[in-house]
Length: 119
Image 1: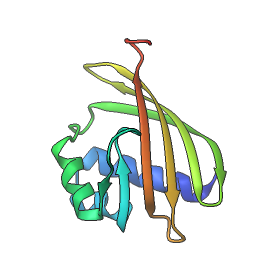
Image 2: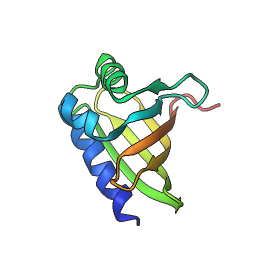
Image 3: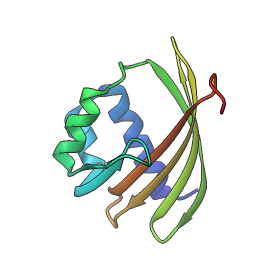
């Protein structure tokens, strides 16, 4: 497992659980792009990412997240995970994370599939 990816996901989980704008912003570079769906236009820029995240936030303790790294090469990590909401669905996740030398995301794309609604 790549230590930089593991540290980023630990920080992501802390941001997810606290909805702290400083923690959220610290995950991303100033000009980062976040795609909550791979086919939609990204949220561009740290401030916009924080704003969009908080507009869609989960409440602390709403979900658990288990993950493992599938691949890492040239600063790009692919992570597979499972998100289980206490009062809701379970999601299969696939994340593509591009990290800079300081461990901040320059690009983050997530795919999430509701396990109760298979295709």
